[in-house]
Amino acid sequence: MVVKDRVGRNRYVAFRVESRRRVTPAEFSEALRVAGAGLPAPDRPRLVFLTGDQGLVRCRHTAKAPTIALLGALTAAGGIPVSVRTLGTSGTIRRARRKYLEPPAAGPE
Image (cartoon, rainbow, N blue to C red):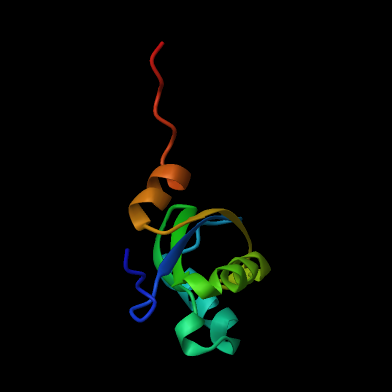
């Protein structure tokens, strides 16, 4: 098995935003950019998507812990107070969506 260290492995962190009003993806992305400005450029998290109050952020596998800490430390986006709760981390977008963002499928009865 070949490890993609030279290309870089990504992690996808699923999260939920709690706020008084819905935060737009542009507002959240800007808040994330400002908060991550102190990190080295390759380690800065990037917003993959934000739908409603749930979304995904991409980061390098070596920057997973700082990314989770950064999300937890966000207090405002778009000028309104927010609270961000991480739901989990995965190595692929598909798995992160299925495991953390989609409602659970109804089991057989």
